[in-house]
Image (cartoon, rainbow, N blue to C red; front, top):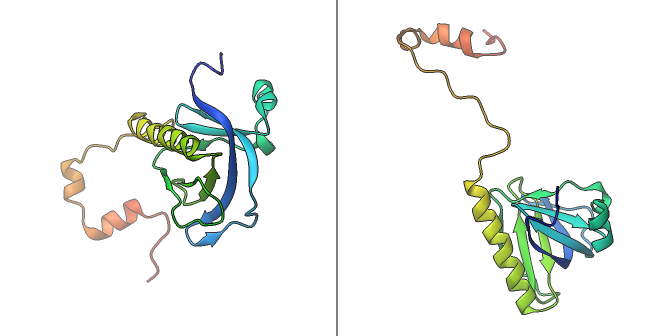
Length: 156
C-alpha cells in the first residue's frame, strides 16, 4: 500500500501532553519536536521523516483517532507563540506549536477538516443492531425484566 497516497499534512510540530484525562495533568509535560503525519482522520507521530519511511512510529505509539476530537488555538497558553490544543474523545489533551502563525493555521485547518471528515466515516467497530421490540417484551412484569436484563442478582 502506498502510505503517502492519503497524507493530508505532514511536518515537524512541537508536542506536549497536557492532560491525561479531564482535570488530570499528564505525568510528562515536556515539549518534544516530532514529525507529524495527518492521514484519514488519524494523526501519527514519528521521530523524523526517515522513521516515517521505515514505518516506525514514535515510541511505538498508536495513532490519535480524531473522531469527536476538538482542536482550537490555545489562547490561554502564554509560554510559547503559535500554540493550539487538541482534545481527544478520551479526554486527553495535547498542545502543539508551529514555527509561525501560517503553519499553526495550516495545521488547525487540517486537524479540523480531519475531525469533520471523521464524523462522516462509519466507525471501524460496528455495533449490532438492537433486536425489534415484540409484544411479549411489552407485557413483561418489572420482576421478569430484572431477571432477564441483569447480570447480577439483586440483593434483597
